[in-house]
Image 1 (cartoon, rainbow, N blue to C red):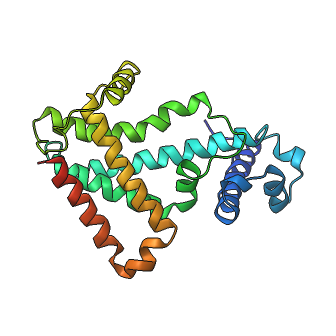
Image 2: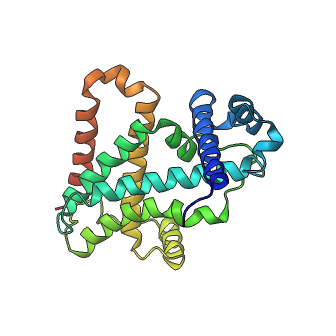
Image 3: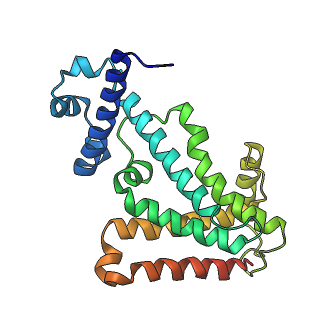
Length: 230
């Protein structure tokens, strides 16, 4: 259906609001997000902007939806660069995609994994899109495990009872993998998050200069080796 002129203008204004919000996050951090500040930069009145987003939290939810979706898409693209039976290759490219997306989208990464925005309550409609990126990661590891392609010493370790209970609860919530697979996925996530966060805070680039890419690749290969992934 062809959009009317008013509908096109409204969509364009929504896009400008989002673009201005991302710019504000890049300059002041997610905690500094302000509808009045966005309206001021766009030359709008605050009441005018509220016609598009009823309050700050509504805008934050849309921004999170955008960031989570983009992140999950990047992980899927990395995963799908290799054949389904190339488990190590899919994990490798997914890890690279994780770091690449974070380094290329620092403001979105900060909104997802940085300091929480004071007073914001995670919206229920975000849960599926927020889970999607983790499901990509745990799915790659789970497929390798199911195919008998994970044979390292770490995966063979017995989980503490407290973790086993928690992972059993996650299975009941819809994560269809064993506790050992979930543990490996969380371990990989923690590793990639730490590397990406150090890079975005300029620690890695300050120490390694042009060697950051080689460092990232080495750490991913180390995880593949530790997991015994073939």
